[in-house]
Picture 1 (spheres, rainbow, N blue to C red):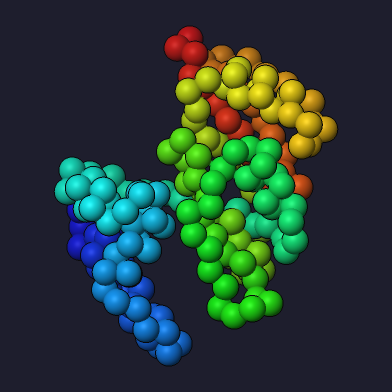
Picture 2: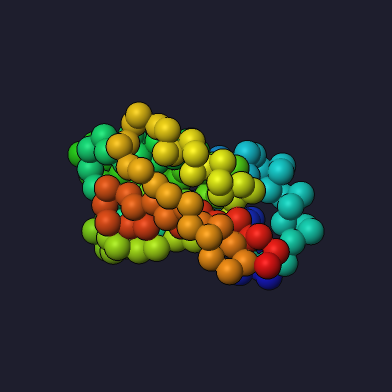
Length: 173
């Protein structure tokens, strides 16, 4: 892995940037935070994976708004779990990482981080099973269909903030 992309270098940068705001954390805490940001359960797992991986990790930032709606949609309806959360201080916008079955998203209430209306494509093992689960959910009254495209099945899900999540499974055609 290139040094500028290495998780260790990211941890050093994280500590330095936090120190500029008078926030002090240990190096080991910085390593754990970076591991979580990259979608790993802990630093050891991240370190092992980074030794064997030269591909960059892409984590989309999705704009959300303050309130409970992001929890209701991303956690309760779609089944993502919160990996970590950050606010600069109480009352400030929330920035957090959520993940589900290998998919990692950053949800941000910060105005400058992302623009509502993005589209994110997420590969899943079984788009049809996901469509059935979401269709039958009582959390959101969306009647989401399964779209058959050449070479893939898709479940297109609009979030309450104007973003589109497109879950797809390649069909081999």
